[in-house]
Length: 316
Image (cartoon, rainbow, N blue to C red; front, side, top):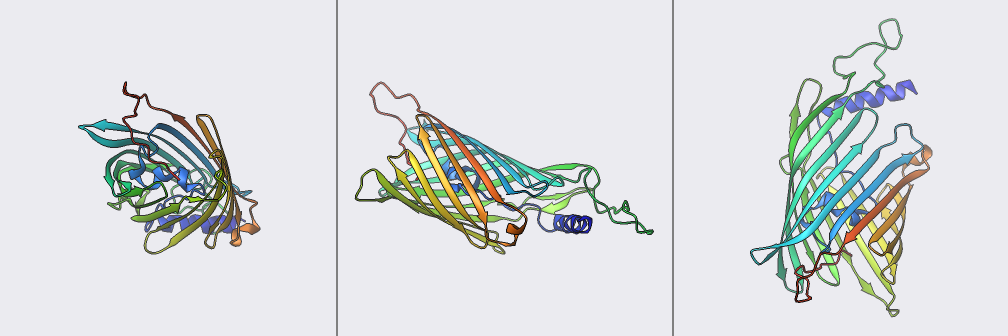
């Protein structure tokens, strides 16, 4: 086991020189689109407070954990519709490596055809933390654990850098599609214990709202793709919604997992749960991954005319 941990540490240190971060994965990606695409800021037409917590590969020691939080709302300025938002993501990949993203989002809206086109930008800060007390260092000349390697940090080292995301998103009453570029400037860090850059990422999301013969039932298929032009990941989701309050679905993530999705809306609160059943080799050491989602929606005040100033664009 120590040899395996040591090998992982060496691989991690080597990775510091080529790639420090890949955009994190959410099974309930439609509820965390603010992480991937800043154009969705203020999308629902309400003030939305969103929280999502994911624990990856339950059963592994120091299993990766991700926390996502966002706040977004629309506003009107100079007779134009806009959106604004704040996102915070904490991604703990292991006891040795973690990162945090904090970003401010702005989106500009324009009616186009039967839908609305949104263009968004997200300037922010990316914080990387490496090292820690649980690192197992190489063996010394006598074969005893506890050797040293100047390339492996034995204490926590943190570094920060500017980050930038861009995105577009188009939605009608029946379908939506969005594209975004994350880490546009490929931020680079070169410090004593951390030398790395973050690859530019690309993602695409699309979905459709299918009416059935029963007006209480709707089908909402969707697809999500993200890539750094070297590796890619595809999620295909099929979800059924009853009475616009209760939902259940299945998703398939290529070479990774089958996902069960459940959700409910109770007044101003919406919640969801996702369970990932692994179909890759990691299934030998884990019972799966779990993800919890919670959103509080506050309806914005209406003008005296009785009509809302904010055009609601439904997130399917």
